[in-house]
Length: 182
Length: 182
DNA sequence: GACAAATATATCAGAATGATACATATTTAA
DNA sequence: TTAAATATGTATCATTCTGATATATTTGTC
Image 1 (cartoon, rainbow over the protein chains, first blue to last red):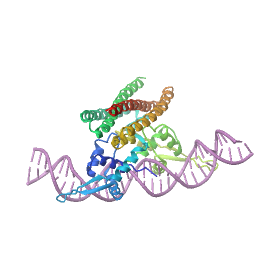
Image 2: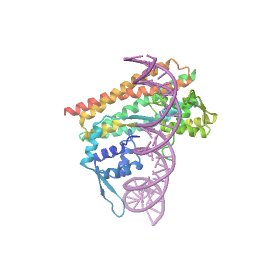
Image 3: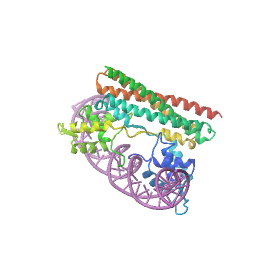
Image 4: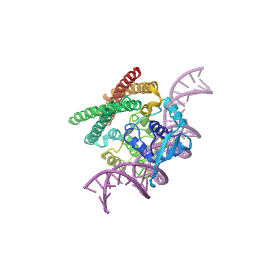
């Protein structure tokens, strides 16, 4: 059945936390969820309409002064759909790292090129780690909120993996240096 | 320009190692590259035809007894295209973990559900680690081969990250246990 | 008051997925 | 020996998603 549709569950999940607009959902995907999931307007808005047709969300027009604004809320049926999906095992966990791809074919690019890719990656990881550590500190003050508990677990995942990435960067650079000397 | 096309570079990269069939390329994606990149027949075969039209690969019909078989080789022009891409910085490194998604929305599923997802993830990671460690051991014996050097670096990346994942699983399960007691 | 940035909805071409169809070759096991 | 199962191999398709862009209003800044 092709790239099995996931966006509907993502949006239902976001709406299970609180009602919001499509724009706000995109923002969440770009900030909170961005370390493990993504999404674009091209799938958000059509999916939102589909979910309304199916009775899983309700629209509420909050426009003022001609400024369009539609707030979405999850229905009981939507919550059931979400819960059902949450109970099922995850189907696919996937990494898609262009850096690794370029490194794997590195023979055509040489050691110098490989090191550049690694260093660029290293810098990106350090920046992400700063953000994630800030997230973690903030969340730790509000762990009484159940929703935040789960958020915190995913942030910890991010921190652990980016730390491992940085270790690997160091190791890989050293390894290449050794190979260069020979 | 939409989801900028990557498959052509992936196939050129594989062919830069040695000539092979489309079927063989799919196998590489499912084994060697699977820890950081994927691909399906639906993009492999059309891309291969496109690459031939552009003069970046050449086809050679190796059929025997009516059994279809097309071996592809990279051309000089194809190698240049690949090298040019390899020199450019990686555009996107992306994680897409359904497990993390289900965990993030875990409030609708409860602690028990969260633990189940983590445990399933943990088992998958342990299995992957076994495979990766075998890869690493084999590769270490053949590091005089330049291509293997780069392969080895990506395997080390996989090992480091899966080890970090396992640490996180342990930590997350303990954290949930604490929350359950309260 | 001008200008940039943020808020907000919407669409589209292009790309990739996952499945399946089809056919032959090789291995396994009864 | 031969039947079944698995591996090799090419190819296509509906569905899904991405990245970009269009459009318009509001808010903040200098």
